Length: 278
Image (spheres, rainbow, N blue to C red):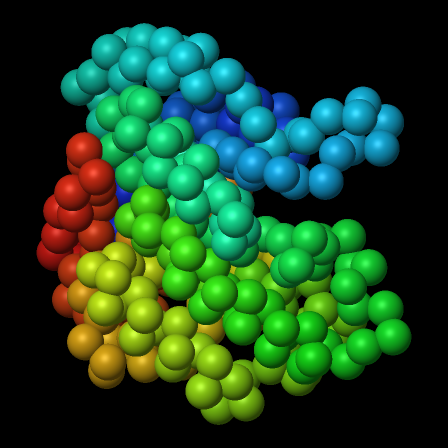
């Protein structure tokens, strides 16, 4: 396949077989990123402490062996050197009581990048849609944003807040009851807290993949983040299979520019690196 020239050349949100919701070999994800013209990627598999146990296996599907993870990824980083720059990351599932555990976890290994994401709203994953039963989408969305702020008050050991309006992907009517304006108080609270903490947000193209018609968070949220002084923004596909690597990245640069950015951000050794768009 001929490589596609895109302004954003770093996919910093990718999942592999180390995540409970993916069976993609790491090598397959790296090859797909290469085909899409990526120069660097960060593998960010799910690590969700205290996620509800799988009914069939009785185990938490979103935990993995950190030592083996690093062994595999460090080997592939050497193998792919000169072709694509492989960074090692993780996506932590935030819950307020997990702050100390995540502090210990992120201190154990030399991660390049840590995403903090809300996957559980007071113990319930919107993916299962149980939380929407008997409630309006707007009620659940507001609870999700409030829960996000609760987490930010308790957890510090991450670099970028993932897919801020993730919950909208799974709403009964998706974006019908959602806009930045409708939840501006809650969203502004999140963005201001992120900025005060010295953290960033991500432009996650998964929303486009899930049929929302916009990235996560909505460009209005990204624009507001920039207006408030936000500077750090990574770009990730949230890919769980090779065909979704760098998904719709040809749109990402234009979205960032329309929101007031002239660069995007990568991470190495937990430190931000700013890359010029274009």
